[in-house]
Length: 394
Image (cartoon, rainbow, N blue to C red):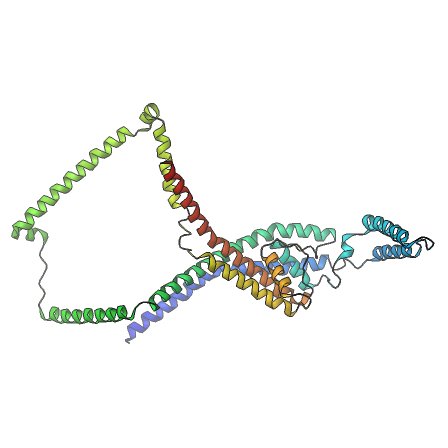
């Protein structure tokens, strides 16, 4: 390769790097902003909630009262009466004096990892309920944090969902193209190769002949018209036909404008305006979902991607959550990624909260991708239904 070719390739390579950098930069900034927002929130909630739950003297007092009730129950009565008296006394005491903060999961303290996981449950709107702020400053900070964190998370999910939808759609189309080319008949491949060789042979022969023949300067249009009488007559006929067609189109357009003015439609037949509006609505219906037509992925593939990701979490989570079965882990992943978050199944090990937070964010991005791809199917179904209804009315 010559030096000029090498320089051009180097210039193209150097030009692609800044272009790729500016394409990746906005998405990377969104991800880094959410990560930084999570870290800042973790430090804030760790600072506000570090002393919550340590003052449990009131809780111990309630437990002592329950102990006294159990000890002072009347021994002379029957066992059924003793149970009824104990249940009634403890029910009143628990319903009026026991606080929800005392029923928190033991072992969960407000360190950095638990605070970071709490921030993840806030801006993803999962909200398990097993971890929440107790202090007044913590509750105010939670309101402010969720106000700005939820829109940031939704923006990131929309961005990542669009990227993943485009990647999956292009991968699906490339796979279909490769598979169709792989499954084609070998005879067609041989014929294609032979045709390429023949075309290359012809082109080489023509090039050699053209190189031997001396080229002359091309004739001008006026010279051709002077020398060739047949060409001149055909040119004049085509020109006359073109002028005639333009005159017809102009007269037809002026007549349509006179007939279809809004004043005449309103006086003669007001239904024409509604009909034209209906036609425009039908035409606008064809534009519905035009941007989504490029994201044509079957529902089976979308469901396969979602099930694979959830099954990955269902197989990994029981490795550190020893009390969970595969069904519990699958249920937890599904409830989490759909942002339902009942809180009946919650993780027990804070050391893995960071990995679980990453799993939740990536999983919600995949869910957004699935919703984006399903929109195309829904739009196609809607357009088909509207087309059936319009044809039925006609």
